[in-house]
Image (tube, rainbow, N blue to C red; front, side):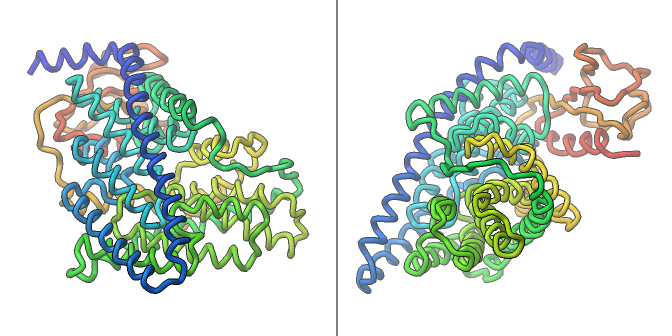
Length: 520
């Protein structure tokens, strides 16, 4: 036991150097896998367009396509049954494992998620590539950790590196990949994790951009920055997006509940409904199929009227709920950005008619609304701002992005809308009975920062009722490491390193987070 503890601590001291090399390795491996996934989904989207063009209005061809959709649903259902962790976005699963509350098997998740996500996009479901890309990247990091025989503490870092690399390769957004993995997945910042994640993210983006180019994902022109005399409209837009974001979260969760009510459906039955719905929507409004990137092109090119934008938003929203609620392996990240763009476009078009907004600024509102809608749903404003900056290649909208994002964030918070990924993780844990991990006896190191006004600030270590299954092993203050003693007085900004058993990691994380963040 003492040997394991001392080895874990010694290795933690060398993390900054070790993790740079491992971050490079994980970034390269995850970048290649996610690049292949991205190319596969692009092929699936193009193939779907050709298929829909081929079947046209021919009844026999339509019936044949419906039969193929049912077959694809059966295959995806089989994959989900074999590996339940591939269901949905994948981000809550990664987050849960980083927190020590879930366990995934990379050898099963990688191929199943890859194939399942490909079939869903080929079938036309309104799902995105970002969540699966993050999960694929994280599982690559886990695989590297297992192959190198690393401990659980180091594995958490490598999974975070992989998640960052996955988003970077999926969207050509290395900064957003780094920020999202820290802000949403790892839920913490430190020099160790920051350097390694940055290395992985940049490496993955370099590999991806070297093969498919460096063009931003969204290619539409924004001629001028929005004048400040229009900024009052940003506050209104932010409030609207906050309300819509809260509605979106509730709708996605409600869709899951509705699917589960008929017990006879099962995993496969729910997927059959979603795939058949995609077949019907493909005949009526094919533009809302898949992630919906084509809608951005039409919207920003001025090819859509206000009425069409509103109708498309409603159909896309409902179809996204049908697709995601079924438990199909696919993300909500990209579709929600499309919905945000449609909301922003509709708002700006209405603004032209009602408030005399100059039509040249419609595209500005399209971009701004994507960030605001993302923030309202995910509650990660920094990631949203950076992501839209990288995906659009526009640096002139930073202040406007911040205003809309803050307004949307505050509105969604006041409406008591829980961030979507936290809600989804809670449902996964509830479905598993919220069991703690019981595998092995490895030691795990976790870091926590004491926030100003928390119950720990200004108190001695000996005065704190620490959880019985953890050990406070170090304290970092102003860049210097201290050995915590009973009479050591804790201060705001102190970084605590806590050791616990792997099986208790999730429980200890919640307890220490409450101590570090909860006010007296």
